[in-house]
Amino acid sequence: MKKLPEIPKHVRGVLFDYKVVQVERFDDPDMYGDIDCDKGIIRVLKNLEPAIKWQAFLHEFLHACEQEVGLKDLKDKKGDSDVDRLALAMFSLWRRNNWVLPGDGYE
Ligand SMILES: [Zn+2]
Image (cartoon, rainbow, N blue to C red):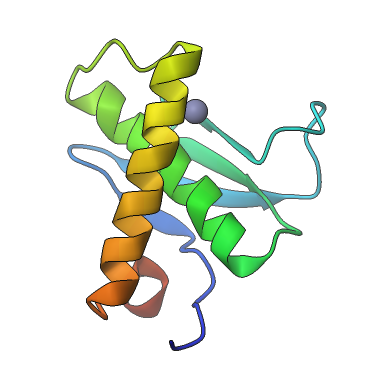
């Protein structure tokens, strides 16, 4: 499989656009990413293995989409693990179908 591009710096959601920022660390060492839907900012830990970084990015991006389409039940622990599974499915579909990842074509 071809080498993963870097995650994008901007991404378009369902209705809104998001800036994607890579950060050195989070206060919580178990955190790989977060999202501020009001400010339109997704933050992802910088020093992650590429596939893990994509997973973290897609997870936060799906939280953005979830918010935009008005899904409300994905905030609890079970919901968050469902978001993780969806991010994994999305990532796998992209790669298995050789679809262009956002970092390849959109700045
Ligand atoms: Zn989450």
